[in-house]
Image (tube, rainbow, N blue to C red; front, side, top):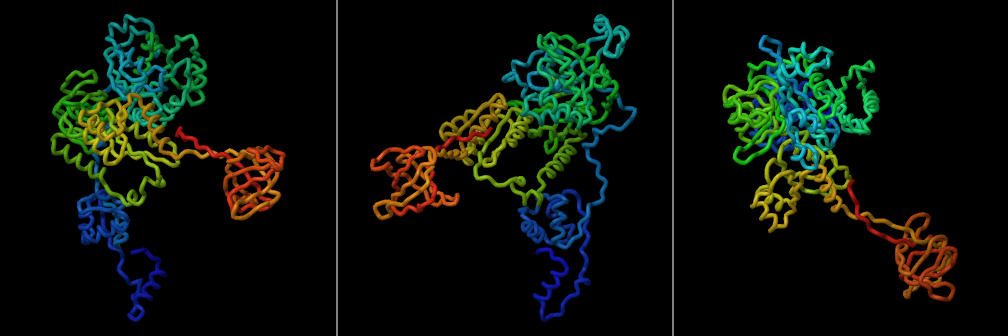
Length: 633
């Protein structure tokens, strides 16, 4: 079954067929060409290759893949096994246009301006949520554990009518008198609020990829922080324009100039310094500068010329998803293009369903929502994944077929993954089995990401099961079977699960703040580590003479060069720097008196077990061995 060069093949033929007519390898038939799609079942591969299914499965097994007749494989795997089967595999030349590409709107008469999608980003406690609270005149900080936003949340605000805008007077961000403005009235802005803690970098990255404008908020008394730099980097990678909002300018220790100087180090040079970075000074607490910030956002949106086709079928992206009793799977969706209607059949990755309930971000039931609208939908067959795209269809059959295609793509078995167990990482002896339940899919992704970044050479976290929703009886049963710890993030424990956990003593740990969850997992991993053994040298002696070596004991003498030797000390005997013998001191004599210890600079005799391997010239080191608990930082 192995592949050989022509020279090796000829030697094999010479050995196997020594008395028969040797075939001419040059005359052997060429590989048969087969065109294959990107994804196919094992049976489809066998049919196209005109080979028995059993032969295909046999080759898959030899390549480390246990597959059945109806399981799917990708083109790369098909190429590998095709080579083993003597096939010349080529990609099928078919023109396939994916439904997900519908959100790439081409220029047409149906395009109309849409509200900008703005993401508020920045370091923890720099005032992102307070800013949104001020803008939409509600408060949610108290509802978040530890004052930290745990989810991505979406809100849409409608700016004041034109009459109110005129009454403010003055000039806008472009220097135009407000009474001359006619485009500020009834304009909408969709805001995404992302968590600022380091654990949520994946959620922030996702936010930057679906947003039109990033408002980077920086506290004037704190300056540029690590997550500030991360936001600048992610926005740059996604070509998203940044508007900097320097917050807390009303504080006594605010230093706006310092913040601007720090920003220049990362390519954000203020406009007044000859650069292109738009910087607005605000106070989210008092509301100062917020009108100016909103006008700058609208100005940037005008420059981007954001448009969409509301007449098209809806395309959106999942921002949050969770299970809710009485409603089933709920998903918060940002509509990117088209209009979604109540009753629309939809597919979200491998999940499909019909929009039974459609709600605005404020929880108000609505019949439809257009581009840039954040909406919550119910009616899905199961929970969609964080970041999956929503596609609306004419019929439920079309939605089901699209979901089935996505499911097949997700369940593809590949040779590459089958032969690289553990993702290419070395197997570790110490594993911590976890079952993780979270309230929303976004937080679950953030937890998994941060747990994967725990730096330990000896331990690893193994996620046995994961999901969104309360801790159930099945979770407790699985934890008992796999000896796992159940981790719950902002979820309740169902009564049946609690009863099993109490009887079986299954550890369940509940958390409201993600960094406390990660710290607890580190503590659990630390307890699994063997203790660190520390040897402290107590004294060192040079052996000068051997006085006794018989069945009754071994006695040697020497001079203590450093430290102190005491009765009961553990010793190591070194010869040419290598340890050749280990024992414990039974007694010590100094001159003719028996003593408990002897200090440096003095000579003494000491006794150890009979048959000790000690010679003149050896070095005897007395030491103390202690154990210390290890911690994973």
